[in-house]
Length: 83
Image (cartoon, rainbow, N blue to C red):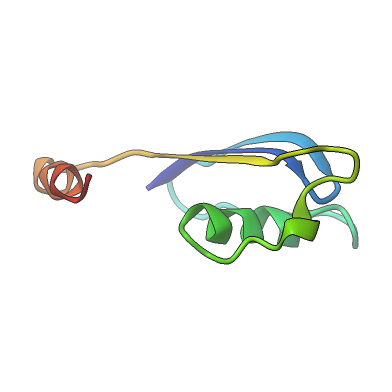
């Protein structure tokens, strides 16, 4: 389960830390607030295409970090085999 998202220097986001809880998590905000950018950052961190123009204007690089929680020993072992 995704428990934390950290985004830095991506599009209009200077820095954002999002904590996810169990169950349904909802992102809300006005048009242009960056909801789609946060969802897109998850896709990028999981191996999706990252256009160079997504880096925040005036910055050399962007950073995206996902933190997952593994709730069973079998899943943890499977993740260990993937690394």
